[in-house]
Image 1: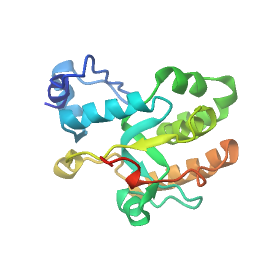
Image 2: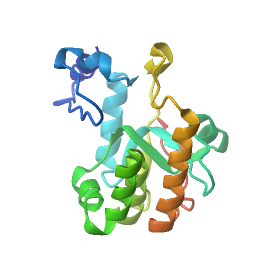
Image 3: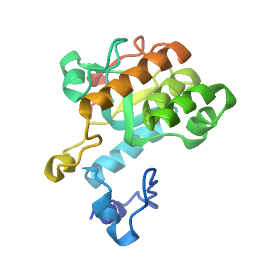
Image 4: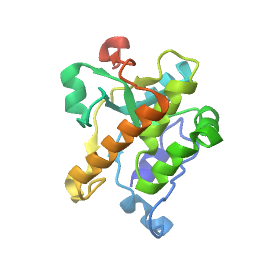
Length: 197
């Protein structure tokens, strides 16, 4: 259902699913195994067009605000403060050469080792790396979707079965990556920077 949905979007030429835990499902079962937030084709295409205008940024649909303390997670927190400084990569556009050259460099090995150890935080690490390698002053760009359905609410399957444990891991990553690569707290942008956000 989901792969078929996105394959019909006019700008989509290829869909790559990276299965990173457990035995991968049969190709015919993939739509049911990959829980996603459904986005319209217009959202996907608008996100791609925003990324084409800002190729040195992480452009996506899941904003977060990192303020230097323990993780206060979720879009409600972001909206309450009316600003963001991180984009989760679950539905995002990035320059693969910029991102992966930095991610796989020897100087980022310590960050990758933490990601591998926790089996978490690769998206958080990418945001820190963009802050240190992007030629743009702005490292993230939020795209507001027309609508979204969080299928995990219907299926009972969320990203983590232990939400507090998940937040604890990500808070540890934030603190450690801030020590390694510098804080993101000085990088903040409001939601009114573009008409569609």
